[in-house]
Image 1 (cartoon, rainbow, N blue to C red):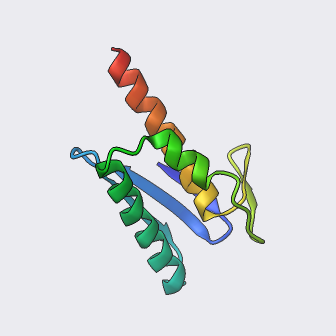
Image 2: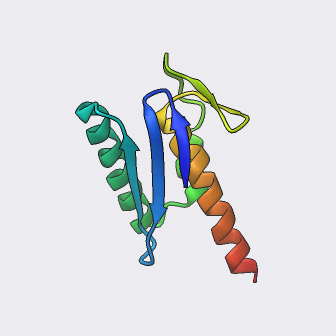
Amino acid sequence: MEIKTGEGTLTLETRDDGTINLSIETKNECTQAHVLCLGRIINLLLASGVEYGVIIRQLEDISSDQGVWADGQFVKSIPDAVAKLLSSVDGQAIAVAQD
């Protein structure tokens, strides 16, 4: 899954073991490091039993000065973009659980 941010295109991949991988297409190595760190922390939270919804609520609506419109929604920051992607993953997990 991908979403555009003011700093580049953010990609979230889910793995079979329940972990995620976050990456961003940008030349800014500092931003790349922050995204990698955020992904690792989210994986620790998920491994500790923290639900997606709790993580999403902490990240959504965090603003920066580089907000952009992407696919009909306003993306306020990288954390806000991660929350939007995690919402999609959580929705898929719920749909699979109901089948």
